Length: 241
Image (cartoon, rainbow, N blue to C red; front, top):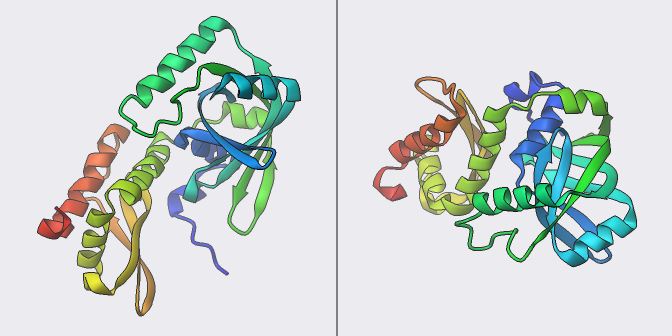
């Protein structure tokens, strides 16, 4: 099966792609017995500072080391392996304040009830892509790589639109493709970059992918969300309200 790779991804080295995927994510996950644990984090020079409960902190420090995974959708998945370590109290307070500020308006905030911080000192980085599994990446190259902030933000906007503005996405997809709403089985934003975005639609006749170009390329990541919303709302019209 041929896997579609958006052209901007082809310009990234594996290290850049992995670093971009990490900064695009808000949380990591790891397995604790039969349970999957998901917690927020802050990236710091390639390592991670995990916001955890007191019980999770003790459990991670007692384990010595392990791995966590991050899923950034089209960018790929990243698995980071290393040693769990305690952090200074001042660093812990800084991380707690930073994460809580980011999630202040989040009703189902993953940081709620978490009051401790554990560092994961990374010594193995693996990038997972469709059809290829996980492949190791040079750790030094990963730490030195500069993430593509436009693509990272694009993934975050994509997730937000598909989760919280699906009615707008479906209405716009119908306008873009000419498919009637009642014929649409699913529709979602599949990719966003500085030049435009991709919309995927599945109807009774099958699936299709449509590229929507911005009138003017976006060069400031802070303007990317507005640019996408303008195109979606223009296409959807009253049906997207």
